[in-house]
Length: 295
Image 1 (cartoon, one colour):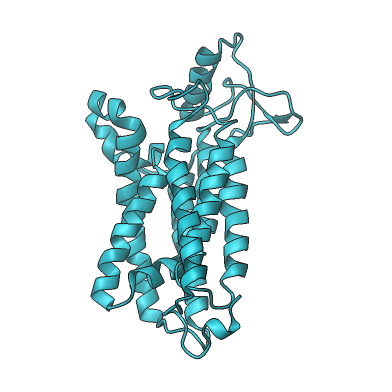
Image 2 (tube, helix red, strand yellow):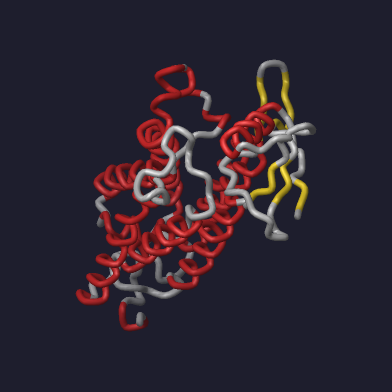
């Protein structure tokens, strides 16, 4: 098995100001999304302008941060916030919900689309291939923080997590898991479910959607594929990921909150894909080329 590296979650600090890996990963994610969007907008057949891309990424970033935090409070962290209200602003300690962030982005897209007089569905389709790198970066941030570990395992690619050499946040997470699983002395052998999610929900999702959207697709097909892939990957990884202690298993001793939130994504994605290919509506994201080149 692989020893878990004791990487300090704080990159450097100057007085009370600390720059953390978790925050840097969000910056990397937004920067990657902006760069990819600019590349797509620069295509000869694109109807997007560079200035529009800049504004869209700003809207999306606000939606991700506010929605992700509020979603975490609603779905997972309500008890922690009640016990310590300052938890709301301590984002650097983790506590972001992808599903909440997705809702936040959808609301941000509604505002952007109205302001720029674009079709809501077209803006969603333009965004669909962009978040994968950011999702991967965010899960690497979870790994460095030593949070969201998977279940105990003896597979050779599992990680050995010994709290002794770890930094405070990592150590606290490991000790909490030891208490939950009754491991004494406290040395864990667990799945790195953060990295599983990073690879599947991040890199694989990005590659598939980027290739899929290289040519025009029917309106809402990219959005539908995004929902199907993310929802499916998240549902599967939840089988090896340890559910939040204050939620546990919600049904049948195996269904988690993450799975319950992912099922509607999969269903909606299938509906959108079926509607897209049945209606064959041309996307407003392309000018010269349209569905004549799509399949």
